[in-house]
Length: 615
Figure 1 (cartoon, rainbow, N blue to C red):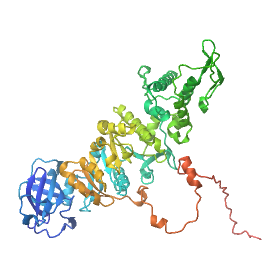
Figure 2: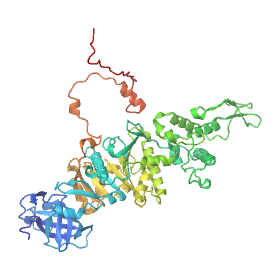
Figure 3: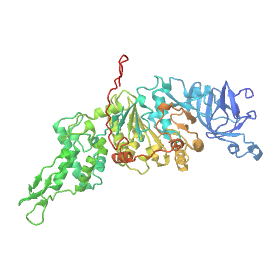
Figure 4: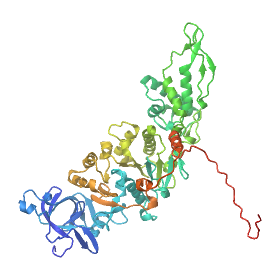
């Protein structure tokens, strides 16, 4: 059979655990083989082989080719032929059912065959399975590569690659393949995917299937708001008031607790019991009123024999952040006297006022219809916020964070993730929860907030999602160009790894550390992968595979291409005004203008054809 079977490659020479050494056949004259009209590359690192075992077939991936793959016990002259190949076994198939892992091992001199298109269909299953097509085999472009959608979402995943390796295009292609494979109506139209877009790359690429929320919305986008009162008190105070010691923090939290209790007494809210109210309960309260009450207490001066009569000169206004004015204290026995119970938080209150007046932070401190009035009433509650993010008629939500100031970006990401995870965690028994309708959270530029020693709110929430999210229907997709700067705990919980080109040895070492020892050799290919080519291993891939990711059409590609340097530098340009540059810098908004231009438009009236025009 071996003499006439075009798929025959060689025979098993040694078996050690899951590693198999194969001696290639002398009849294998070239690295190409044509089988049933399809061309296959033979003996390529990353390609597949099949070892028949009667009714059962074993499948493996080629990890090493050449003399170095030969058994160490052979004579030098046998090794020098170089016709050797090391294969790592990965799974087996009985009939049409493929399963990862091994129930038996091959024997010496067993035949080894090329894996053909029919074999791959056997592995990946039919159209009725949960398989999502994402590209084609690098060693055989006619064979589709598919991933298990269930494993991709519930067991988490990571897309890793250096700048320019095709990371953003891979993310866009993968999300499009999940929702609208091949551009048709099949797929997952009821998917629920949330994409944190740090650089504003995906709004154009996925506009036809997404709803976009932005801190600096463009036409067709909706404003992004994150209500401050939905955050934990500690993270909110850390942002608006800076560093606080224990006594100073108690001054703030006691007042917040009091204001939240007053809000519940004013009007009952569904689900909250006054006896179980905590300072972290997501109850609306006014930051302006909080600031006013605390600054009033800190600056009050008293007169009178008992020093109990406030010496107020002018009442302030919390709505405009105008503080009350008291007669300054004086030395001696006549007064006025300072408030001896003051907590010494005037500096922190000044910072809070500055934050509230800074228009860059309106998306969190003045969150539109979610901004409470001075009594704590709001026009819209958190259900409207979650409905907008997760319950609209499109499968994808893009949160464009490119207009968010860098000093608050990490805190904002942590707040968004905490709001979403807490909501889905506590609603896990309801139809809107994560179990009956799972959520996939895609986190771009994850290394910016998931460092090993970051210790921020975002890192804490993502670790919780990575460890527990599977149970509650919340999946994570980590996207990063620096795997070495991503927390090892988070990366180790990613069941599926999509590794694009990585040149840095430290980054490659981190990726290797997440794989079994027998597959680590595959990662030696990372520096030489082409743009848009990836090595995929883990739960969603039934076999480790070297894959060429499908490239979306031009109008559906993310806005992450390199600048056209040659074209931009080819022609001399006129002197430009940089006043617009400074205006955008000051406004922290890319669309800001230096001069407002008003154009008066008037309709143009044409003369009728039969009307003579006289000069």
